[in-house]
Image (tube, rainbow over all chains, first blue to last red):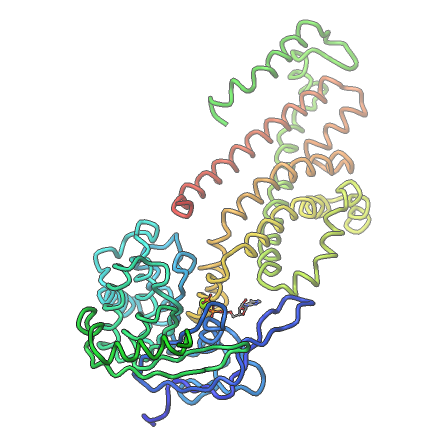
Length: 259
Length: 249
Ligand SMILES: Nc1ncnc2c1ncn2[C@@H]1O[C@H](COP(=O)(O)OP(=O)(O)OP(=O)(O)O)[C@@H](O)[C@H]1O
Ligand SMILES: [Mg+2]
């Protein structure tokens, strides 16, 4: 049971463009990979290659073409599976501006858990992202980094077995980004959740992941798979200076830029 | 309506004053304003006024209420599903283009000269601004918001009442504000055309029986109803936008 992969995609093919009269374009073709339980995998590739599309398929928000196999815990994905949380890059449109921070985090638990349990989960999730003291704030009163942490807390509140993240730190400044990366690694270590992380920052992918998958081509497929052997726990300074990190970064660079 | 709107009424007051000075109480077209108020009560007709006002307000209120429920429901369905939008779009375009005066004969034919007929005509006229504002409000929502609701596996009901409706509330309120004067004008028009109850019917009656002062008095009453209703809607709208001021930041 436990050596069953968390996610498994075989011969995955994806089309986009649903507007009428517009031909559907094949974005991904013959994409195959698996993600083990508790693994941290990053997906990289140039803009428009199909990273978001792939993540939306894993999240059950986009249907893969006929003939593709997409399984979560051994079951075919059709619609958002239970136990999977998705974090969007665009936190501003993902949070409900009329709800407080705590109420936003509570949203996925409403109608599913008794009130005391919900409160406890919300407090726990806010604690994990370091926002326990801002529970009663409105989202617009917070900085961008804090709003993204609210979204991450909301994703964690349902105690997901898999966390899917689409360039979650892409819109943040370098310092905030480094902070949130470390916080994410702590959460990853504390919860044992599986993470699939989309980014186009090579350093970020290598720093966080056990494995980096590179998408390329039209339609895109996985052109390289680079393991990162840097030991955990990782720290910004030491890990980024380690030979394992530099080696992995070099290889990703090579695959993407071709030299 | 508050003391702030008083200066805006000055031209009207001036006009009425002038009219009073130049007009005569017996003029068949422009009876002096001082003769209007008594005209409401001549020939024992005073008892009709309050029931008529209540009738008008009831038809207007019921019509606007049903138009709101219907407009928001259809607007959300159309906004969420492109198929529904395509399926009903042309029909709605046609129905929207029908002038209310053209609907009245059909409505009286189908529903008779009665309260439901009045309400149906008002609903058909007041529906569109609410429906269109709601559906375009939903269509303009960021896709991420709907993806969020799906990804969090919210039930359909919860998605509508916890995510969609609050998000499009400003658009809905704007639609209602546009629909309000339409609903009132159409109420008076139907009453006038069909002589079924209400202030509009009294206007028609006064006109047919050559009581010009009474016509003007009834028009003043209709104007007052309109002022009060519009200021009510405006204060509701202010309340909604104040509570949601955070969205704009
Ligand atoms: N709804 C859609 N309709 C039409 N084309 C789409 C749609 N969504 C995505 N695409 C196209 O599919 C391709 C892949 O898009 P996707 O968003 O997955 O790329 P991405 O790798 O996430 O890019 P980025 O790094 O810029 O976020 C792009 O060329 C895009 O134009
Ligand atoms: Mg993307």
